[in-house]
Length: 44
Image 1 (cartoon, rainbow, N blue to C red):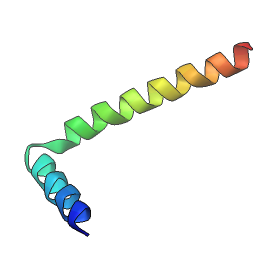
Image 2 (image 1 turned 90 degrees about the vertical axis):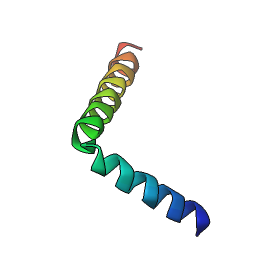
Image 3 (image 1 turned 30 degrees about the vertical axis):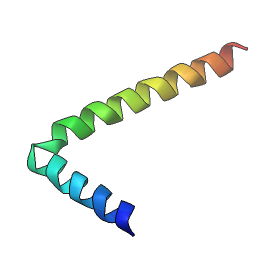
Image 4 (image 1 turned 180 degrees about the vertical axis):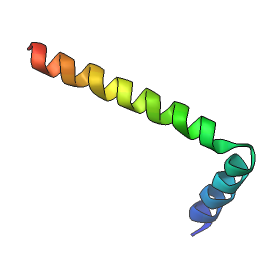
């Protein structure tokens, strides 16, 4: 419960700082890493 509150507060602070761009960057990194892993799997 304490951890959840901390995560929630942090999420709100990130959102206040225009977190949409940060989230987009994180999503892009995640997608690119997934694509890299997928191509690696297909090569083998």
